[in-house]
Image 1: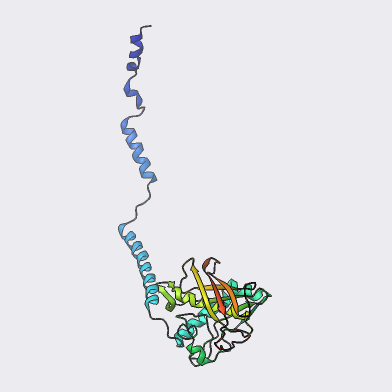
Image 2: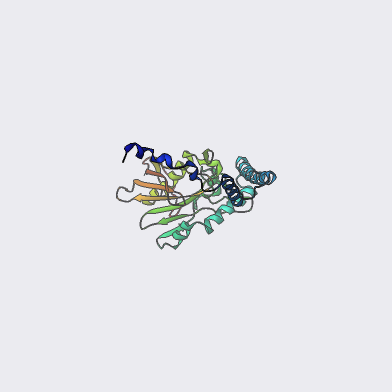
Length: 281
């Protein structure tokens, strides 16, 4: 066979045989398929109404949230403040699983805070005076009757485990405790941590009283205002004596995640006469 004829064979295949249907049929088939699968188009006015409704609702909700945030906090002892405190208390009583678990635990005893302090002393204390109310430590104190509009509002408990020498308390931080917007000030956290460490430490002292000698705080995650946080404080029984007490504290959110951890040393001064606090908190 002649090699030149082999290379010429492809030329014998007509190029027009590639299309088996006329071009007009192909165009009509393609057009029909497109028309059958397309969805009815939405009118421009309908889209505008939907977008206006969505962005309108977002704007209204954002405005309400911003107004409630930028408004001045309620004055401690006012009717609005007492209403907010009652709402915080209901949340504590009804919706916090940790409260239910602690109350069911046989080793934990629930106690009041500042039971041995008079109303006047509570007013002059940092946590029960300037930081009191829903704007500050809304779950930290028993309201003095002189500051409340309608009697005393009991809004704070601590859970004490005498076997393990451990205290668990819950605190609600208001907007007045913020450093940055929505974030609790580190100093406010340090104040509450110091008090909780001290509550565990003085259980070791015979006179049930002492002062802070050293406080170390490590901030691990942001703490946000408007939420409850649990403070878990444990006395170091091996290192503590009748004049020195070591304790550690962990601050956790309601999901159990660690936010702050701290250690403290508390001592009984030799030349300073301190007031005996009492057997409870």
